Image (tube, rainbow, N blue to C red; front, top):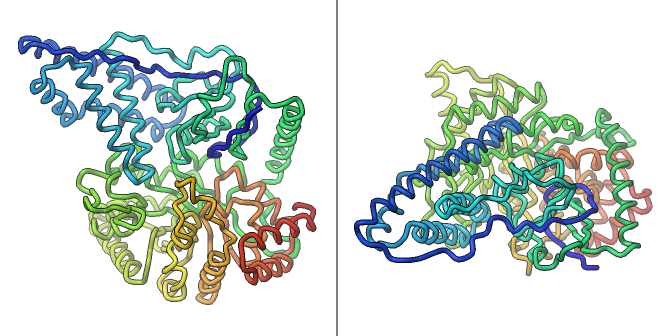
Length: 579
């Protein structure tokens, strides 16, 4: 028996046989010189391969639209754009004439170089887009070399899919009735595989590093997508525990889902709001089944990342309208663009000396520097506001100056809509995301110009504790119960309440049941999380009293280490029957 730990990206427990998918890996790529008279025929071979590959991608696009939505199908629209990109084709042609080598090698060498450059980017989002280039490269190479793809659509038995990495086209094409779980060496929360696994409801653990090297023919796997763990060949006792856990998970899930209509209210009548985080428009239709009272974080950057360039105003307007219509009168908070310039368009590149993009030109900083891009998004949100209850939220605000500039651009966008006689809601709340220590420490100042706060704990932990969450050597230091973090949370919540506005949280901490009593005791008004986490967090809230939680939070704030607080909360939860 061997236990591997990775990244939990899609919840659920599954036990069964594995299928090791090597993909359609290319082994030796032929490389040979050609004479000048062969250049034209090699170029024609390339153009024929592009046409054939594009036809396959169009078929995948149509399949994606049928099975999911146009938004998810945009992944393959982006692939088509890359295949037909004149700059990419020009680069291939220039190398062909300059080097006079066979077209397979040139395509392989150029796409390999592009992928390597993307993978070395310090920005996780950009690194994960390298898989799209790999998908296109593999497709072209197979056409040029006459290799017939093996399709995961041909799976004819229930399996747990094990792979080093999966391309978006492979995930879409696979027989989803047969794939009961996914375990991968690569990948993270924002990879296409993670997004699609969640959309299909397939338990998945990514970032396992070595699982493809650890498994052997005939091995049985126990995959826990909620805990981010995979056990290879569990012992009989371990297998029984997982089977029991699976039965319990199903019972608990059904029990929790049966209570979705109940309010998130403590036993002494303290009411809070539980909302969902989404990244794609079609997710809005599913969050309601988990009892979401609205959307507390709509990550609008996915509209930009899937195509690799700035989304047009109409495309954004349609996406925002879809979400608002699906949610009815329930509030929808749209976070304005929160990416680095290298993931938007060639005209929005970060400075070449931006050595640390986490502290560099990104999010609100980029938007303020590119007001036309920013106003395009704001106009789309304003126009869509007539279909529901929309709120706007600015990410990575570090001080009042940035907030005032952003608010001024909102007014400019409103003026442009009026000039074009485009309707928008009369009252739209505009809030500040608190994710930088300077914002938390000056929350009383920011509250004067904010209609609400939403605390982004993922970055707040990273910036407060100087911890790169993507670095496995230091990620253990990202402790949400660290005294400094708790004090910043308390200071932010108190500053909001003193100004008469609500304090929400949209970071991962908000969806952690173990943390719910402390957050409740600190006075948090709204929790926003992955929709599937809502029932469990609600169960915790309904099983406690606010007064007990407030006393717990006071003790936590008095502690001098996160370990003390973890011990305190564990004992408190046990005393309250695990709520």
